[in-house]
Length: 235
Image 1 (cartoon, helix red, strand yellow):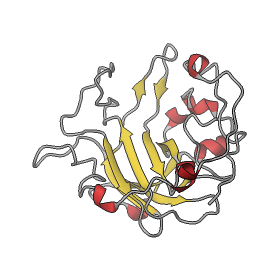
Image 2 (cartoon, one colour; image 1 turned 180 degrees about the vertical axis):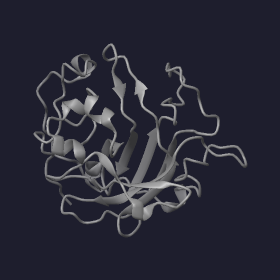
Image 3 (tube, one colour; image 1 turned 120 degrees about the horizontal axis):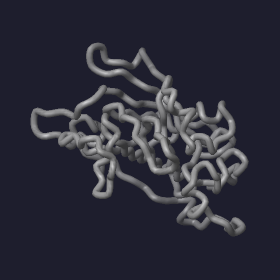
Image 4 (cartoon, one colour; image 1 turned 90 degrees about the horizontal axis):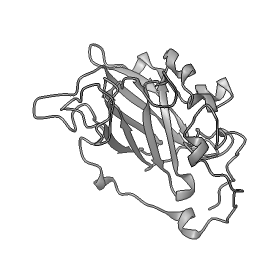
């Protein structure tokens, strides 16, 4: 098995002055190109029995008995594809996010929005034979961050994907259609192409909504190749 190299011109630069923390944590030395090892081309392998029955339901997987998380209920679904557009079955997808108020359940979280005692903010699932996945959650809220005097992160969900090898490892973020704050975010601004940014925006999918229960958003993921979904910190 082999994979084409990542197209570094497709990804944002490692250092962007508007995204201030990149100026001290972005790599400043010349990139090294090393051939992939056998382990990078063949592992890891995950078994379905590692996924619990509620792992893909963030609305309830941290909630007390009879309780649910607070916030707009949504379904996020899509297909994971390889560089040839083929579905990737049995890929492990992990997600983590802020709650409806824009606060993470983290010991060093400083935002004053309250925690939701029934929302843990993380979950996981595996793709089926057609490479499709689905999880239920609440729509996260935006939150301020100390980049500039008044910078806010748009509502987003972090997504980690393990394909059929470490060479297909992907970490990214998905945003939500119609959110005006996407275009104000300095992190999003490191991507110079508007069309490219739109590949990170989950689209409202009314055909998959559950009436009187949950809206749905479609977000497809491409692991490598010219249409690769942006890799967080890849460039």
